[in-house]
Length: 192
Length: 43
Image (spheres, each protein chain N blue to C red):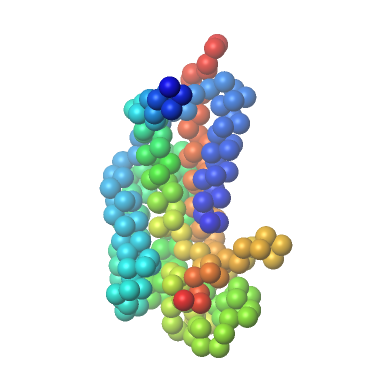
């Protein structure tokens, strides 16, 4: 949900922008969309109901997850010249580095898990194992490579939405915001 | 009639491209991001 915030905010900002400036929306030409569809499809399978039904081993989940991230990196590279494209690529790359350097899943520290789910029943998560159905693996801070890029940030408690996210997630959301906001066609105005 | 007008707007190639762009972005950041939500932990 935190990732979608960038898109929703971008759409709202775009709506205000084209209303105020009497502009139209200009479609963006994205290249190799099929890579995103394929990567998303792979993740729906491994992190969705099907993955749970089949009980895929975490090692296979990690391999498929990294493969899907590589597809997204190629997509980001092909579309790097779009407005916000370099932000999308940077956010993705930061997440990818944290994932690839820590065994194929996004690291999260036990302290962050405690803060995220303080009343989690005993045995619901273990250090060194995947965290529930998430893309995360619980690793102690000292055993985490590039811990600064891990899922270490939490939303304020008053938001009532317990989620841990990374610096890469924030940059991804900013990139999505920028790309959508830039879809206003500055060269055309309606009604003069 | 109004619904037919809405449908013709959705069938407009420019609108289709805009929807494809936004849909692709949604898939991209959902797949590229890796937040851990509390709701996904217990199962």
